[in-house]
Length: 136
Image (cartoon, rainbow, N blue to C red; front, side, top):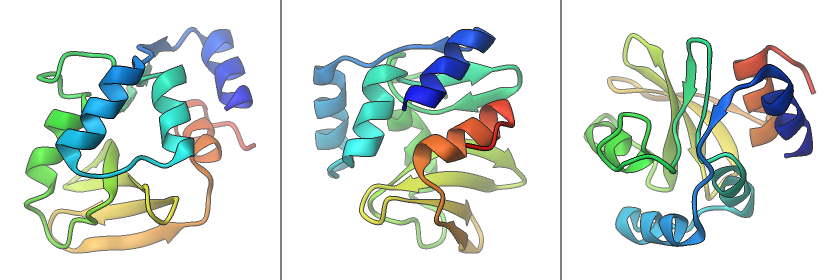
């Protein structure tokens, strides 16, 4: 996550690094094990907000719309929500980017249609592109 950290610092993006106990608690509450890649994102950044782009995570109160614990609840009621996925961001019209902790993949998912696209992009490369429009 080195390139992402450099961009966050250079651009002055807002982050809220999550504490280890927050990450462990979230795994228990959500009944899933986060991948090492996703844990690294949470511990280093927690969440990222830059301009109009907000990436969900931890490090904020559970009631915040950016906290994965509150963001995931209504999504799990949508069509075929992947059981090991966490929401990354709302992209509009009922579509979301998700991170699947089991497959280590970025998913484009719809409340009505389920998973509509799977990307081979790594989490860091995806975040660099979506937040800062930087190709890694």
